[in-house]
Structure formats: C-alpha cells, structure tokens
Image (cartoon, rainbow over all chains, first blue to last red; front, side, top):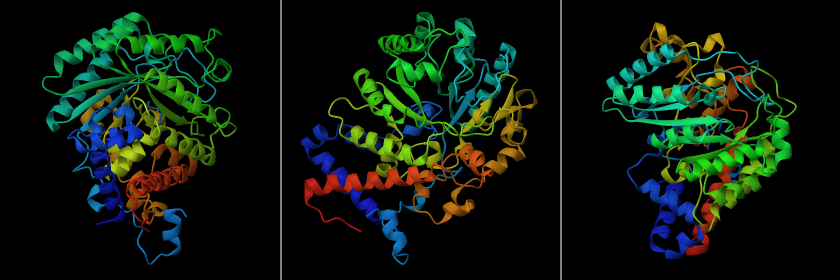
Length: 57
Length: 397
C-alpha cells in the first residue's frame, strides 16, 4: 500500500470521526464526501474539467 | 523538503506518493462522457488583449449546420452509451441570441431519447439578458462568466468592448442576476503577470457570492504571441499555492476553486479529477466550429494538421480519423520527459495545446509542469500537516 494511500485513508478516518474536522476544513470534507459517493465528478460537468482553464471553473 | 525532490535525490527509493497503477484512465475504462464544444460563432463584441482566437472571423454557425451537429453527436453517444455535455463557447456565444438557443435546446430535448445531456456556456457576460438567463436556468446550464479583476481598471484595459463602453459593472450585475435565477455560475479569470495576485481578492469576491473560481493562465500560442503578458509558471504557482491554502481554510460554505479542487480531488480519489489529469483529454473532448469543422478543442481551430474532419463528412468518421488516432497517443508513457515523473500520474502530461504552443510537439510536456508538480507537493504537505496536527502521526518519507 502506498504511503499516499495510507495518508488519504487516515485523512478520511479523521474526517469521518471528528465533527471538528468539518468545521475546520469544510472544503476538504466536501471533497472527501464527494469521493465516497458513487458520483464521478467527471460525469457531472466537463466545464469544470479542463485543466487549462479556458472552459470555466 | 519537497517530497519529489527528496525522492529524486535518492533514486533507489520509490516516490512514496505514487498512486496505484489502475488509477490511470484508459480509453477502455475511462470516459463515460463526451464533451462537445460548439463554437456557434467566432465573432465577439470584445477585443481582449490575449484572445487566442487571433483575427476575428465574421462567421456564425447556420442552424442547418447546428442541426446536423446535434443529430450526429446524439446518434454517436447513443450507440456507445455515453452521456454528453454540450459546451457553448466562442467567440462570444450569446451573440447568437435567444431564439437560436431556444430552438437548439428544443431540438436536443426532442432527439436525445434516453441519453443524458447537460449544458454549459462560457461567456463574457455582457449580452446576458434576463430572457437568456431564464432559458439557461430552465435547462440547468452551468454558466462560466469571464472577468479579470475585482476593480474595473485592469479588466477594462484587457477586455475592452468594441463599442468602447465599460463592461466591468455590467458583468458583475449579470453574475448576480444569474445567481439570483438559480444558475450554477463560475467566474473565469484570465491571469497575466499583472493581475495574478488579484486572484486572491477575486476568490473573496466569489466566496461572498457562493460561486466557483477558475484560473486561466494566459500563454503564448500558435495564433498570436502573448509573450509580453504571458503568466510565468513561477508566478502562477505562487498564486495557486496561496489560493489553495485559502480554499482549504474556508470556514463557510466552500466554493470550488480550480486548479485546487482538481488537485485535491485527484489526491483523495487517487484518480485524476480533470480530463487531462485523468488521461488523454482527447478521449472525451471534441469541438466543432461555425463552419462544421471538427478539432480536438477550440484552441486548435484553423490549424489544418489538427482537423479531424467536417460534420457534413460525418462525425463518426472524424472521431475515427487518423488525426485523432495520433492525438490519442499523447499519453504519459509516450512523453519522454514525463515518463519517469511521479507527478505525471496526476497531471498526465498536462495540456496538449500548451505542449504544442511552447515546444512544437504533442509529445512534449506542458510548460506549466512545475505548477502541477508544485501544487501536488504542496497539497500533500498540507494533508500531512492536517493529519499530524490531529493525530500526532509521525511524518512519513
């Protein structure tokens, strides 16, 4: 298991076990929640998907 | 010490933050959506200093051409079980007016069958009428609106209207009207060396309104040189890092901010968030100009060697063309400078247009490579700090 995988797992555990986490890092918590849902962000809208940026935010 | 640098210094040790191999998207396991950029006109009511469209053409896509596009694209996605997003771009797409979009959307809804179709539109905002906004709201559009500074001076200098009229106040008003109608809005800010750090204020502007912020680094390109105003990778990285930390520390309803959102999502999911982070963006993007010509994306319009075909010769043929086949080969393992870079699994070589415009080859890396690398390293560092602060875990690596 890569160290990144361990790091992300610890972060997820923290996010899910601490109510303080959401208050401190709501943006991060939102991404973690989203990553745990079945929805793939890539299928939600591609204008948010071009790394160059000219297709929007 | 930066992680990648540390691992470079000790080549016997593998980079410890390598995502799993199966995180790499391939055409077979990857995209479930085809993003079709439609440029209904190359014309614009602005003459922005850095516009990549170069010399404007007085061209508009006839409705018969648009009808052909809609029918052929929907037939293509139906056969493959794909969803589709129609991205209206330009030029300035709102020059086409309410009736054009009303008729187009009505046609799409009538022929789409069971296919999932979504819509977005990138605009300078100046021609957004209440009637158009209500139409876009009805069809669930995502609306990207371009504005370059929080105060008028810089914006008016870089994005002048042809009429000479000031536009900053109009655009702020249209952003607020769009929000009030329930439209999902994102602000798009083109960054040069001059306005780069105004992005910090723009983040606050967006946060107050609950809209996303996207940064578009101005770069020299094949249509016209912008080397005098091009945003340097060094400045871009500084701005991105500062914004990333602001994004992370938001203590109210969080807003999207790209590229931060993309980077963090990539790390958390261990799978690229944006198309170029997930693999070759050519797998899922294609764009069609006013004359029906089909290109990989609108950055390549009118460059013959990147033309896939024309809608009247068949969308299917264009998607199977030798030109597209060649571009699909722009994957990390075929880019020598990316092959051994662990970060390339997050950026997948970055933007193909950046590679072509700066190094003349699709098999070159993105000139903003150090930005992606710096952001990934910074994000990992921040995640470590958060975990360490809350759990007293020792720092790995």
